[in-house]
Length: 311
Length: 277
Image (cartoon, rainbow over all chains, first blue to last red; front, side):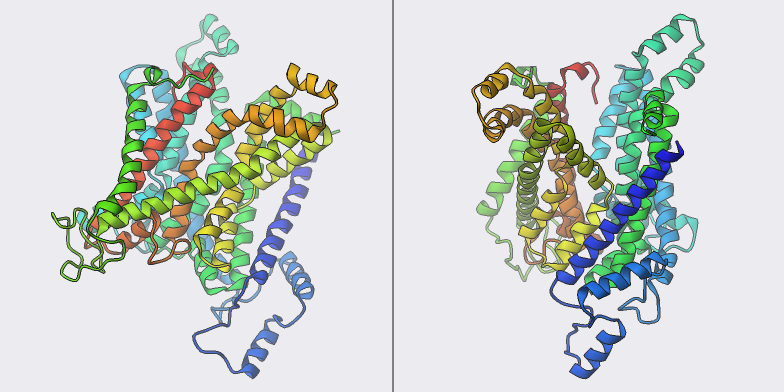
C-alpha cells in the first residue's frame, strides 16, 4: 500500500513537471509579452524592466530559474499587479474557489446519489422515469447557462439573493447551485445505474435469500458496489468543477482562482498564469489520488491489485 | 447488434432526431431567408424586445438576434464537428496501434493516455488559444487535440476484439505487413463503434467551445457563437431576451444530442439494454 502511494506521488511529480514545462514553453513561444502596451515603452526602460524580471536571459536559464523557484514553493512576483506576489494572489483566491468547489461537489454528490438511489429502488415506476428524465434535462444545463439565468431570476427578478460579491454565505448560494446542477444530474444517473446493476449481483441475491432486512441489504451490500462508478467519476467531476468555477466566478464577480487565471491569461501575466495552472494541476492530482485510494476501500478486487503492484 | 432502425426507437429518441433535423434546417435556412444580415445594424431598433420585425428582438447594437443566434449556432456546431474530426484523427490510430501491437507498446501508449487524463486540459487549451491568436481554427484543433483520450481507449478495446479474427490471421499467414493489416482490416472494422462514440463527444465539445468563448477567450466579434451571445446577454440583464434565446438554443441542442447519444450508446451495448440511463 505504502509503495502504491509512493509510486503515485512520484508519478504526480513527473506530471506536475510536465504541466509546468508545457505552460512555460507555450507562453514563451507565443508572440507578445507582458509589457506590450498601447504605447511602446522607451527602449531603456523596457530593457530595465525585462532585466528586473530576468526576461532578458536565455530561455533555458529562465526555465531553470523558474523550476528552482517553484521547487522552493515560491511562484514569483506578479508581472501585472506590481505590489503582489503570485503566492499572495493565489492565497487570496484559493479559499474562495475551494469553498465554492467543495460546496458544489458535496451538493452534487449527496443530492445526486440520493436521487439516483431513490430512482433505482423504484425501478420502472413513474418516480424512476420522472427522475431519470429530470437528470437527462439537467445534463443540458452547464454553469454558463445556469449562472446568468439564476442571476436573472433570483437576483434581478425576485431580488431574493445577491447577484455578486462574496461577503456572506448568502452570496455563495446561487454560485453553488449554478456550478453543481449538471453534476447533480450526472451523479444521479451514475448512481442509479450502479444501484440497478448492484441489485442484480450474486452476492446481493445471496444476502436477500438469507433474509437480510431491507435497509441492511441496501446499505451493506448494494451501496458499496453501486458507489464504484460514482467514485470513478468523482475525480473527473471535481476537475471539471474547478474549471467550471471560472465561469461562475466571472458571472458572480467572485475574486477566486479562476478569475486570476483568466485575467492573467488575457494580460500575459506569465507568473500568475503559471502559478494558477500549477495550483489547479496539484488539486486535480491530489483528488485523483484520493479517488484511487478510496477505490480500494470500496472494491476488494482493486485492493488486491494495489497489493499485487507492490512487486 | 446495432439496432438503429426507426421503428425500434422510443418516442423520446424519435423526438430528439426530429428536433436535431429541425435545428439543422433552421441554422441553415434562417440566416439565408431573413431580411436582416448577421452584422446589419437596424438603427431604429436598438435593444428592442421580440417583435414581428425582429422575432428574437435585437441586441445593444441593433443587430437582429434571431439571425445572430442562428449564425452563432452554425459556428458552435461547426467547431464541434471539426474538433470531433480532429479527436478522431488522433484517437483512432493511437488506439488501433496500441491494441494491435500489444505488449510493451500497448502498455506505454495507454499509460500516456492515463497520465493525460490527470492534466488540467481546459487551462492549457485556454493558454494556447489566448497566446496564439483567438482564431476559430486554433480553437477547434486545440479542443480536438485534448478530447481524443476516451476514443483511444474505446478503439483499443475494439481492436483487441478484432485482432484475433480469422481474416486477420489469414492476412498474417499471407505475409501482409502490420501497417497494411491495421489500415485495411483493423481500422475499417473498428470504424463503426468508434464513430458512434465520437458523436457522443459532440455535446462535451460544444460546451467546451461555449465555455471558452463565454470567457471572451474564443470566438471574437463580429463573429459569434452561442457562448459569446450568452456572455453578452449575461451582462445585459435589462434586456433578458438577449440571454434567454441563445441560452435556450444551447440547452435544447445539448439535451437533444444527449438523448440521441443515449440511444446510440444503448444500441452499442446490448448488454445494458434493460437498464436505461
